[in-house]
Amino acid sequence: MIHKSPSSRPGFTRVTFELPSCVWADRIYVAGTFNDWDERTIPMVQSRDGVWRATIELASGRCHEFRYLIDGRWQTDYHADSFTDNIYGSHNSVIDLETLRPVTLAERQPSKVTDGQPHVAPHLPYPREGVVRGMNGERAPAEMPRMRPRVAAA
Image 1 (tube, rainbow, N blue to C red):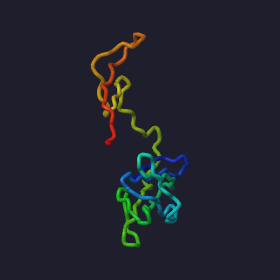
Image 2 (cartoon, rainbow, N blue to C red):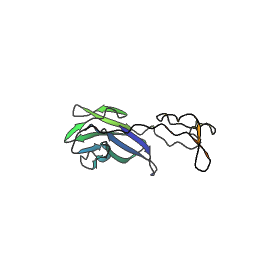
Image 3 (cartoon, rainbow, N blue to C red):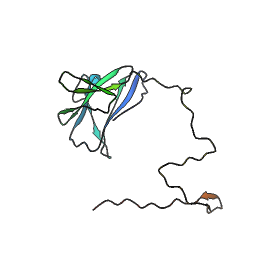
Image 4 (cartoon, one colour):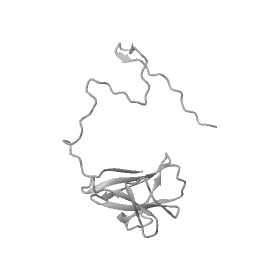
């Protein structure tokens, strides 16, 4: 998976390459047109959650081809923006930074949450009905139902 975000440098985009934790490897590198296909300059690092990541800044306004080198074997990311044929009979992944442009504050969409409307996260359970009083007599919503803790399998 690829994440794009604005860079602090004008004319560049911050790109994060991600591979899931189910990819078992000792070493993973990203190589492409942005580093002259150097196989060792951009290593991916496996974080605590097991996901492999590498973040670089790429020039905006063009497309960049890339592939992953996983333990010495070239792999294509078919979840990238697109892919193209290469001279070796396989495919290169493509990151499209041509269509990205900065969005001004005036162009951003306003929030859909009104000021008087409370925001409740969709993944949290609703509190129990009623209102309780705190130690100083202040009103507070009823406590949230207790959730069972996760227990690792033995």
